[in-house]
Amino acid sequence: MAKIVAVTGNEAVANALRQASPDVCAIYPITPQTDMMQKYASFIANGKVSTEPILVESEHSSMSACIGASAAGGRVITATSSQGLALMWEMLHIASGDRLPIIMPVVNRALSAPLNIHGDHSDAMGARDTGWIQIWSENAQDAYDNTIQAFRIGEHMDIRLPVMVCLDGFIISHSIERMEYLEDAEVKNFVGEFKNFLPLLDLDKPKSYGPLILTDYYHEYKRAQHEVMTKVKNVVLDVAKDFEKMSGRKYGLFESYRLDDADIALVILNSAAGTSKDVIDSFRNKGIKAGLLKPRLFRPFPYEEVAEALKNTKAVCVMDRADSFGGYGPMFMEISSALYQLKEKPALINKIYGLGGRDYMPSHAELVLNELNEIASSGKIRIVKEYIGVRE
Amino acid sequence: MKQKGWKDLPPGSVVLEGGSAVNFKTGSWRAYRPIWNKENCIQCLLCWIYCPDMAIKVKDGKRGEFDYDYCKGCGICALECPGKKGKNAIEMIEEGK
Image 1 (cartoon, chains in turn orange, yellow):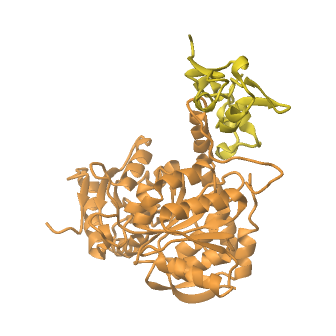
Image 2 (cartoon, one colour; image 1 turned 180 degrees about the horizontal axis):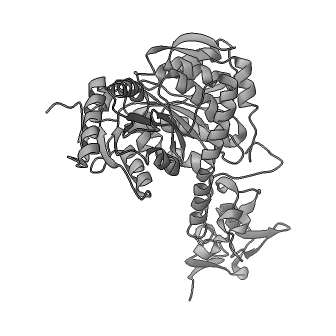
Image 3 (cartoon, one colour; image 1 turned 120 degrees about the vertical axis):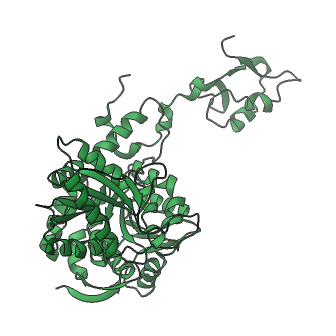
């Protein structure tokens, strides 16, 4: 039986982590993630979960501790944001290269400089090439559900890869929302016992992690790593199917919102998708066929499926809450790559919005949808990449 | 030895056996080669103690030949060797000479 609660995103995710009963949790505070790990530490202190906490002196150390614990043979978690994720960078590659299924919520926050603690996607987008699976979440319910599913995906015997579960800093992490918790027993049963794979602590079968591999084999190892990523999509869908049976909530590689017959569409991640859906509804009420695609699995990126979902539109705007300075926004690059393979493609533009927690308002979505409507009828693109909600 | 293709590699480049460093012949790194002059050796075994690898073979408490499969030619043994009456028992010569 589901339990209806009013909680913050951080508390929801801390509970999902607790329900998965991890063996080890490396803990280091960083805004806006801090109170997720604080809540988790209180679960440990109050005997609600038997996880071994490791209090470290930096995020570089927290990811290092996770790598050691995961290679030793245990279910391992940590959480971070922004500069913390940036400091983990070299260890992120080692976690994925060693095929260690560490589960890490990333509470998305802007990167310095200038120093800013609020939500945007620069941190996790910067980590897109680290070999981690990335799942993005619109709200507290999504973040909770995705965290539970992440254990099944990362720990799947054909996958064994670390997973980031992304949720928007403050907007989701600190806002209280109505959501539903699953029963502890249900989650325990869904996630299952942690199964070891090549554990270092199996003393009868000694092993080494992290060998030196030069020109003779490195290329082959990376090819094998790419292959594993190609299997992730199907596992994500299978896990989502099982999750739907348990919870009644449906998940896919992405969410399509009123997209089937849409002429114009937004592609937008996380919390801003919620705001945009309301505006899509008001455009539909005016007789304008608007739709939305909200990516969920960003790494690996489901290129074919996204292209299929957008192929009948006339004009699409990819909304990025992160910039690749001197390039297009990171999501735009993916959508553009996906659509390039189509014979007939929609016109495509890129808007950068909401950096450093700048509010994304319904009026921003209206502005963009009106521009898309013009592009759809005239076929003319004024400018490909542009910042919106910015003072001149 | 035929090299493996990417499909045959262990996941995560994990080395699946203990003591496998023995398969990696590091002697090919050597630029200087130690030569053991038996007539000057007093069998003190300081070379064996100081060798940072395990490149000096000892059998029944007696020093034997260098293990050139693993000796990287660091020269520590030659530096530490007290020799006999001022005559060193280990000499470093340039490889290829």
